[in-house]
Length: 496
Ligand code: F0G
Image (cartoon, rainbow, N blue to C red; front, side):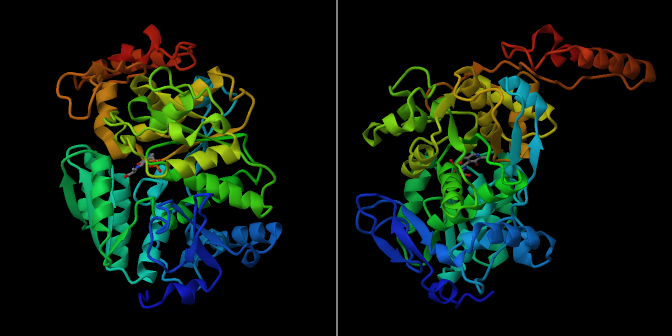
């Protein structure tokens, strides 16, 4: 790795940054250390010269051929699509072999949503267990290009874990800002082990985000939250990887969870660029799902401050003036416990480009959807399960037809938040209803598909007796298919 390489050397004039505000559109060099437009404060996009990419068929051929290569960049599911990235051939690539995540058929989850079929793109299979790695490889590479020495982010846990790992690989100093007591142990453990300086701040994620943006005004510090457009560049390649796995047959719908709204922005940009390059002939509808207690984006679509978050309005009908940050975001899906998502304008643009929707789902819906995904043998963290919960609503509303092709993007690994899983299956999961600071009992989440462990005497008879009961329960039909989404007396809870 050579940190003295400058961005001009690696990218020449083939890439630049541009303000994403249509009224501004100011253009900046690719090597300027910016997070927002200095002129108007808008978010920035990285743009590139399409001519360097080549025609659609040769792009697909090159990307496919690289799957047989042992070059470190070709082993990465991000850098394999490097024609889409704003880096030159000699970029000091920092990679952990990210991407290359599976696309699973999920028949039980499909039945639960009343879909004929459903595919799950499992971004939790990345090196640090979340989709963040696909953007961190490019953001930390850009940090080296810029000669940064310290990289920082605010995080609900996954961005932190990912940055900590990539910073370690690149021998950069790393500080992460997390809301104290509000991130899962698994994620905290990762950041500690990868050697990051972990700053636990009083307040929530939005407070941490404000603090880290102030800290990053110092020239020596490079901020790699998804406000950084180089994060988005890496994350957008998931669009290409997914479509390649589908033999370039564009799905009708793609559904993602929404927190800080970087991922939806990135996928939208990815699909749009592939469309503009002629690699695909139409766009999938991109829909975003938020947790009801942390749903400023979904509220914008619902068209009212309170009331059901069923995304009744099309993106075109939504006025940007109606966006209101949520002051006290609350959800047990701590990854997306965010009230003031930084990238909401880019996410709105993505939903508009593609004709998608935005919905909110309850804690109960998230918990049940998560357990159903588990029954497909896949498993994910709570935030990821918003996708299946949201799809169930979108099918019920008639926005998604049962025979349409659908991909749900799972963003984090099941072991990221094991406490949540155990609590659900033991029937001990409780949500807080008001502010994040509220103490007390909270509302209990029903263990609809709970599968509690069973205490058994260590004798052959007791074990066989127990297994006999378990197989009778497993044979009973329809527990997930149930119209109400409730397990009823045939649920495996009967095992306990
Ligand atoms: N799913 C998981 C597992 C996440 O960790 C996040 C965000 C999201 C979904 C939402 O993605 O922010 O791009 O809309 N986690 C960030 C973090 C905020 O700090 O780890 P988004």
